[in-house]
Image (cartoon, rainbow, N blue to C red; front, top):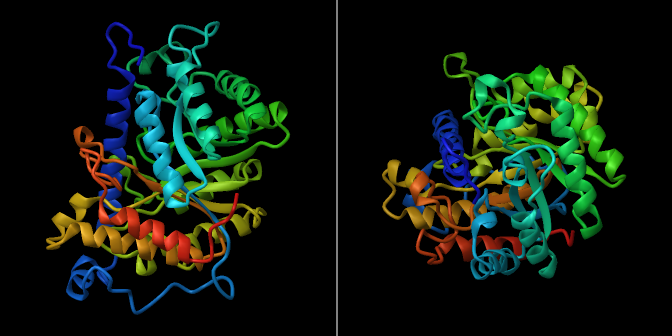
Length: 389
């Protein structure tokens, strides 16, 4: 990956960002109710199913898209490793992959030079396998940030129009190759938007970028950047998904998008009874209610990250954390299949990022398959809910 004097490599920066997201996940987990937690699953064995289930929004399973979220991993892998990673998505029955598309990777030196090599490799390899791509537009280069944020890729750009222009150039390049779906930032409701979340500033960026993308590609599908499942906590600059989405929607921001990204990690609580999943449409204050209130009821919820961190199972003193992760994968598919508001679900991640302390992988850091891989594969194949698109 390209580096610049005085800056960390992009991969190290991304790893740090992922660690921030992991911290947010831990906070969200602590907010979960105890019902059907890790201990309950452990007592019943890996195949134990929750006795209660979410209130379905349809008469049965509905069609939705499944994918794998890779973070920035695909961009730095060798051709062989890249192929192996994407082959996992195919084997799972997934139709989508989610990857970072970092602005600072493509234009590290200035506004007049582009280096698309790493992104091109991923797009070509995905197309070869019939996989669709959800890229995350993030990480402005140093020259496009405010002066106070020269060393931080998680800062918003100094110019919304410059960010939007980059998005339009990317769309013009990749729309002819079948890429029409874009996620605008990642977890803007926590300090992945520095120095602190700013719904009004994000709404302006979202409006400018969505307009530019649709001008470049009439088929553009826009996803509001995946919201971390955290409580509002001003002392650490966290804004809950409900509060953040409400603020953005009140300004008209949801009229620019086709879907809202959301990251409802909930281990050790199973998705079927987890508060983070109820926040989608069944809790008192939920995301779908916000969309309906502000005139965008047709906007769907995309779980652009979901999954189960093995270390969280260990923290919950589960005897067999790998069995819990597998049970979680099964319950996850069953849960989203019954919620007609969910349009897509992406499992994070294909493989662990041990150096960042992220052990969400369907494979461990050495590439060995975990039981969750086959559990997720079986659940997707048998749910009657896997869209062909």
